[in-house]
Image (cartoon, rainbow, N blue to C red; front, side):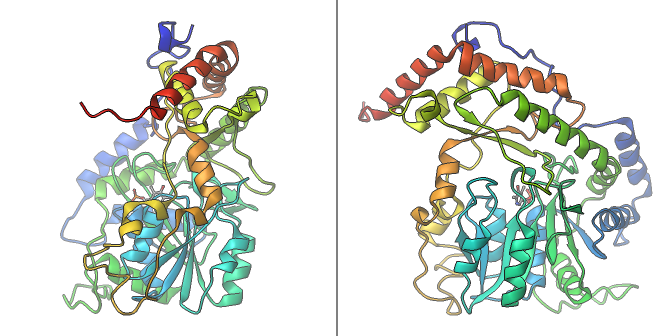
Length: 441
Ligand SMILES: *Cc1c(COP(=O)(O)O)cnc(C)c1O
């Protein structure tokens, strides 16, 4: 019997370890940073150690630690020379920050639909959206899988655009042997607690190969000031923010980075094992990993497919919600993530921006920009069908292992094979309820 109907859940409390995986070395690193910290001196040694370690891991010569991935992406957009009214191409299916970093520079995001196999941005559609106003392209390593950088770099090079990698979900993954963080001209990564490289709290990493871009990004990081080695002159050159990372968060992330290679190997093996175990279970489609790439499964995305069970009459949304409820009740954390493509969010539908419609109405942007969600049919379909494992409470990272993955697969076997009839009736009830006219009491 489904746990939802009073049966016993497949996965017991405490059987799945939450992310991040904290070991004694991490605790010691944070305590050491507390003793070493010198708040009047910037950058602090621990922060520099994190920057140096990310530079070494990615092979990118210039790295800055920031206080979020959002900040690191804003720094990259500014460092690319994006100015008010410029356009930046951004995937339609991603987290808001991949697009709002463009608004933060008073520029205009232009969205691009997804590839239906990889869920990352479709390079062919990127080429179609380039105009004389386009300055940069943001590619996102969505779910833990790199975007198609060979195709993207070909396009950006041909058009003289800057390619910015949003590496927030995929630290530790590789593209033809090259590490995430080094796949574009610049990258912005997140160290938010849930990410595959975690600061436990908040943090971010900016990286570039170019000394000029590094200088610009550093101004944005710290009040618009230049930092000529010794001392501050307290003279803002441009509009800047305070994006400095907390030293204890930096210490935690630095310590985790020492194990990123090993943690990524576990994630890869766990993900591959789960995909193999789910192969015979109809009604869900596990994620694909193209030749030459590795996936680190920040999210393990599943697309529900009721039509594969002969349930063509059942609305996809009702089936998805029934599976989500049933799987959660069995003790496995699963959720929807983005409910709609980013351009469908109210921010882009109403375009109030900073107020008075800026940046869209600030005078520099192409007038009359509107965002039509139906221009992104692949992203819409993915958002309708997607349920994700991973992140913090159904992590594919260590210490969860192949036995944990077998337990995950057992949940889907129970919900979609053994107890399919119960799940389908639940889906039919959900469909009937949502079809009913709303009552006002
Ligand atoms: C998490 C995330 C960000 C933002 O990172 P924060 O550290 O939370 O600001 C940006 N892009 C993507 C794709 C993300 O998943």
